[in-house]
Image 1: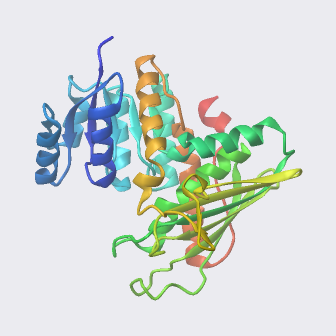
Image 2: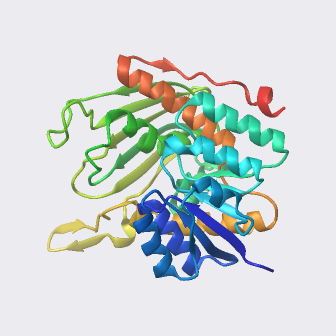
Length: 336
């Protein structure tokens, strides 16, 4: 079978990581083109990976006849236009979160994909592919612990750029736990409250970091999330599910846990590429394999829309300091 020819839009940290992955370790795929506003960065990456074209215009890359499928690792504000182009040219696309920056444009993407008549968009919520998260999902779905009642999440980054503002913490960081809660509970989030404790002194004026969010699920369960993007220590993601007959926790790093001289501990990774490296590998490989069979294998455009709706309400809660109902259309109204 001929390798899937992949083009990547955006080759910053995430896009460059995907480019390396596609070029060096993804079976059935070949990286053929990249596009980035920083042409020097794109040129350097293409030269390092070999036999990769640089296409200045991302829409030209999407339309190119020698590109079979696209990975979007561009900024979120560019996603809507690029997703519509992928749908116009019927190019399967793995879109890094967020799907788009607001509920309205996300819904238009869902509607446009539905008109195409087949799923072409997969959203990059990679936690679903992480072996620990996948094992937790299987355990909860098995019913062994009874009904899941509560979910506790911790999401900490070592540092983020000074341009990373309060609203971005919701849209670009908290969004992962939005998808985790929807996925693990198999339920929608009905209401979100974002609390803002006293901020760390290590951020610029006006940045509210950390944040603490509470999700009220439509079925009555609760989830909470601590997001702290200037934690200084490293990249730390944990999740504890509390059920009727027990609890389960992931993200403790027990595979590197050490005990010595009266102390115990382990390594804390510097960033997401270390913690979720295997998740990204699995995600991209499964996407490539699914596209080769004419489908996708992961979070859908609808999942991206639902997350956008929750984050839109979350930003409103952040700004107004109160619980905000999540406004979503019914799935049946759009997809039948």
